[in-house]
Length: 287
Length: 196
Image 1 (cartoon, rainbow over the protein chains, first blue to last red):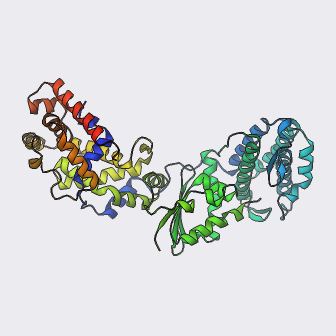
Image 2 (image 1 turned 90 degrees about the vertical axis):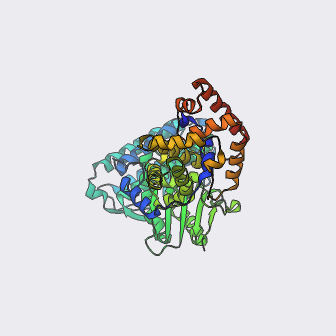
Image 3 (image 1 turned 30 degrees about the vertical axis):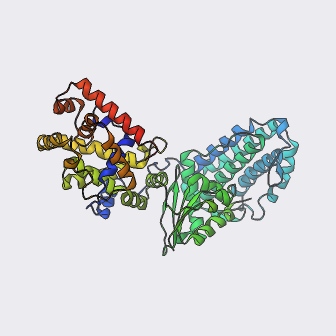
């Protein structure tokens, strides 16, 4: 044993005998730090794209659907929909997106996202879980075949999904949000534990959402999303405040699945402005 | 208006961001968090490094190294295993001891520490330093140790001595040095329980 084996806690306590104001220039220390590592997340950026992220989100839902039983089908899920109806909604959304984005599609109609799939909701409720899982797999395969055939330029083309008009690659990420959200709605309804997106998906989800947050007034805030998929979004205008929040919690808030009074966030500066943005985030949710 | 609140709002805190939060921010590349950590802990890091190395230049260098290391490796800090204060203190101590060992003036410095280790006044711990309440308790705890144990702890911690070197300085067998250190550290841990 050497002196290095002293317990860190005790070492720090002994060290407290010797606090001195350092003569280092804090700016110089930060400059040295930035030279050693850029001001970017430790997590590397995703190496695959939005289509792959969407495909993995579909896989997650399919996995959950295979866990459902007949006894689960009529249980309440979310927004007044039963488990079976929610699965029907997911099937309908896949088909609607397929038709809208297809070669002859004129885009996906705007309007109420849930009502747009009412027929599929009714059909879903009438199916059992096995048939519904098969139908979801079939609809998803059709949609994935199509989006996999799109090249980079085509993914940049604009389309409309529900109330949102954006590039197709962005719409795919919004669907990643939606699939993750409803996957957890289903899991919650039947007593399964929550699942979170993989790190690459989270990375893309936060970066898809942040421009929308900026457009809601978030551009005057320094926003830090911590944890997997996190990052730093400095204010682009004159900064009035700061929000620090976990990236998954942020995504849940965007999806309207995290009540404001349960959201743990550090707010500083103009707290009212920061609270307003957090309050309004749910406007980005599709339901 | 500058304030920090932590949601839910009814648990508002005026103490500012937690260390765990700051390190999480560093992990996603928030240089502001590094500045805050620096402001919070650089007196500790610099003070300890200067005490151990007896060199302003080395202390400045080590201070920078410690914070750059944290910036590059925030994932090495685990809030469940200890405080950031302890993490930075341990890292600083380790680097400072390494520096002392590398330094060509090491022997002279160790001699000075060795000669004076039994006398806290000569060691002058805390001289000219702003003492916190915690520091006072730690100081009192160190002072309350039996002399032989106190000598061993001070040589090992502030002198950067190994067991063997502690034994040589105090002209005692290595086993005795080891025993005194363990006893001394055990008593300190008991006396300081709840601090940190």
